Length: 510
Image (cartoon, rainbow, N blue to C red; front, side):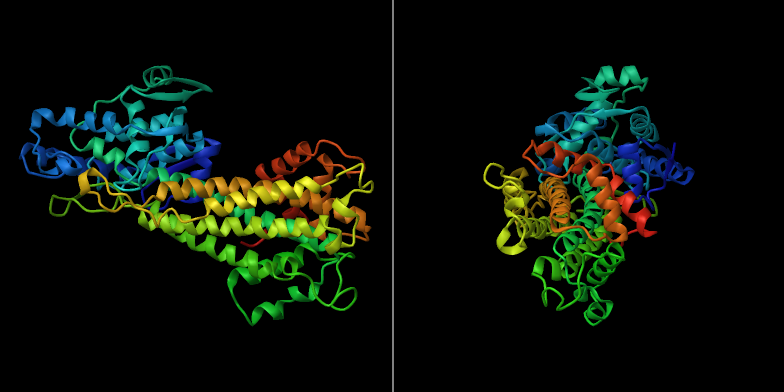
């Protein structure tokens, strides 16, 4: 099994996916161990010297002006967690909850948080032994970080709350007992080190980003199948067209389509059947490409955030300072995740238009709704209807969450990011996009068969063959949701991308 070495410096989205979904083993680097120990010594010294430092010897938020005695430090940290664990709604998926643990470990391993080494090792043991906290997905304002969801994560470390272990939802105490992991008693600074940060929004968002990257490839594959089904005009994909408007994503999309459609006998040249295609085909490099460029921007922001320190106060070894700052504020992630939402939603917008062009005889010159028995059969009529519903829902979800703010903590926390809402919406939009693209694959293959297949391209042949393994040509009406489910499975498990990339001899560009 792959082992991920935690340094606090170089964690990647790919590694997050490996830990969260494939249960790769996590190990703390020797350098991080030393940094954690050094940081913790400073916290212990500050407590012993009775220095006034926010969250260490004071209360939190509006209570930051209340000094806490040394004897009350343990109670202060525990109370912080149990009172802040007030999340709402369904639980986060287990991969997201594992991502929160992983990202918090990476944050704390940098040695600016003052946590004890044994507390950090407890979190690593939970990851490696499969104890996954039950964390309600709603209730975070995105500043002071993800307080409510992270507090639910920490409850399990204290033997409280609930957790999943070996497929069963248990009390936190029972899950830790079965896994053989001792629970912890929080010491000075530790509660705040654990629940003050952006790890909920970043976990959701990083996984949504990974999935969006796959959707970019899938969108190009589905688009290429529509080129086949509609005798698309290849001239618009020529490299020289895109070289003089050199947006990176646009050029990559056109190149992908040329590779996917290489050797196709179904596509045409300008003037053979028509002079130009509708925008959903002709402008797909520009449309998909803009989403690629947006996702690349989001990738850059996420790469920074997952290797950053986002709790408060921060412990600096050089002058033994405990500085109360604002690195927990989610705004640097809220805006990118709102951007991700828009980038994803556009993939479904244009996909639904390509579906419409195939099922509508006014556009396609094919039988209405791609059925040979129109009237008694409805064919793909309601497939487009369902796709339109998902696209409309995406438009609501794509409204920026980050433009909203509600003050909290008696006005002390007077601007918040709503970044976790943005990340959750991005994940939900991604699911809808995947479903629409699954529908497009199915409809495009039906269109190819009804048009008369003269010979597919290298990549489109591989895609067509895989779709047809579980989604037969529609002659008479049948339950189509199972066909769509099959198409969605080959997108989710990566088999479509693997088959196509093997056929074209390399990875599609994003």
